[in-house]
Length: 287
Image 1 (cartoon, rainbow, N blue to C red):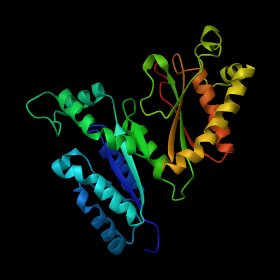
Image 2 (image 1 turned 180 degrees about the horizontal axis):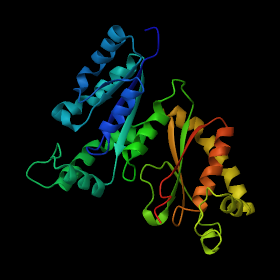
Image 3 (image 1 turned 90 degrees about the vertical axis):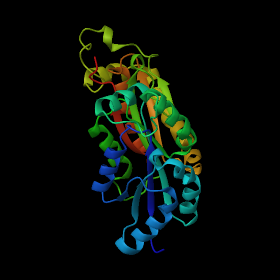
């Protein structure tokens, strides 16, 4: 093999956005195969290499494969043994969101039998638990629209250059729930809240006055320096374990002021340390 072949397995919960993710990969030049029996993955990779000259293959594998899905682990090991650069992307969403999506689509869940949609979702989550824990990138689409998901895929796979570590710095509001796909979570509520200043209440952490207010406290800058150092500390361990994508979530009460400002500033520090960074403000605009 003259060039390392990149293989992405797109999997996860039904209704979590696999179709959107694969369309994004296809637009980025990846050869995409949907709902492939796991035993054929290695053959497809070989076929694409010889017939297409492509070195980027994406395969969708999920519970629609029925009993054949149980063979996925063995097939992935075969792909790795062949020397391919294999990554697993797991798309997830909370149960309530998945149920609503299926109800609005009026389509049956692939595991739905005589019971309701929720029971099928819970059955699927149980089946996929081990695969989720082994995935390189987990994307929670509960609060993402199709454009947000597409940007997340583009950020992760749109650059041909392989980076050491890709970090998504995510701001959020605790009152809307902790992000389920976060690898590291930090609480910014130790800082004074600009919300109580009428002049800044309707501004956000992206505005200069709020940013200057939050960063005006010595403990804010100290936190940013030490937390960026913490990411640098665990970077080698993540890479050693094959984890190239990390989500760092910073939260405050509503996800509008402190977490936004701190996320923006943490991203700057991480970029200076050589980490490729995307910034997402999950709850900005919800108030």
